[in-house]
Length: 115
Image (tube, rainbow, N blue to C red; front, top):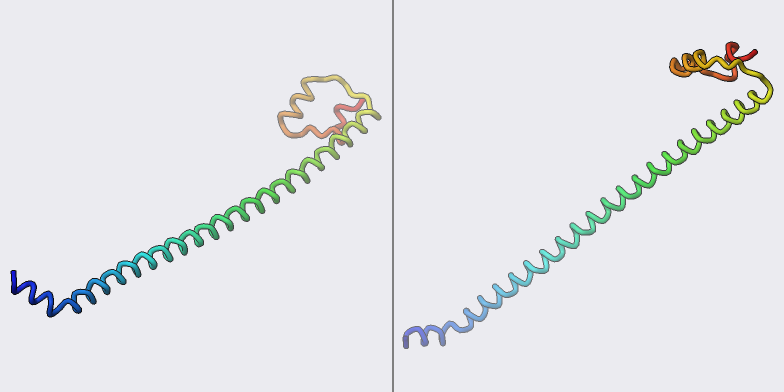
């Protein structure tokens, strides 16, 4: 026991230095880990922001296409209604059904429907 105390008295500076180095190393590891976590969070934020931007951009394009398609449909319906006001049609349901199911129903050009 005396031998250990004498050794401790002789080398106390070395032991304090070792403890200090270990403490600084652990503290440095915590700082490095914290920096790395913040870097990962920033990277994740940038990726999510880019994905959100791309999603909004795609939605805008989709909306514009839908708006254009709807405008064209409204124009065609108006054209059809104007055409219907000027002509009298035969009421042949079978012919209408056939034309509709085969994709050949075009009210603006169909001679079958006009009297």
